[in-house]
Length: 278
Image (tube, rainbow, N blue to C red):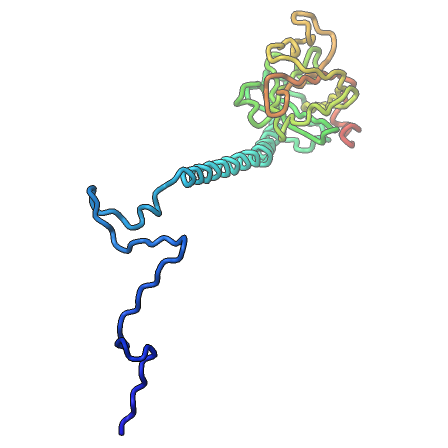
């Protein structure tokens, strides 16, 4: 006798391979048709109801897009700030090195500022615009620049600029210098107080000026760089120095002015002045 096949669990009333009844949806569940249905406007996707944008989805998309734009804008601002702080400083320092070499060559190839040039001193000629004219030191800020001739945007892009027709270092009148309010140049000029030293280097001498006034003026008050500051047309009797820059920081609707008076001069053959650690 052969093996007897087991009876189905339903008792044999239905064939074993009969299709099972599809499960009924639970309460709250939604049945989605698997095939598109035909409408008067054509076939309708089975997912159209699920993917149709709502007010909430549009709002979320708008917020997400706005957030991405703000993040991108923030990164651009950070990159620009980094360039303003570090990038410009590196560029200005590189140009200052070039200007320092030019100044040394014009002063007879003397690269040691503690040694006066030998031989007869050449007759001074009016400096050409954009060319180096003097060294400028502010010991309190531990800063040193080469000053160029001219105050146009191109002249003072990488260096403080000497106002044309104003006095030269050590002369009677007002040796006036303008500089940008950036970290590489006159960023900390507001820290200077009466009594602080400003040292100017010429070909053969050091000129030590003492600050006597700091003031804030409007850009139109150009009389601050007159031979007698604040008194246009007056005949000068003192040897003064004036530094000008924008104010406040990151803006330019004012001007910060530093006035100094010549205290004494020292020949470069005598070495560096004590104010510079000589």
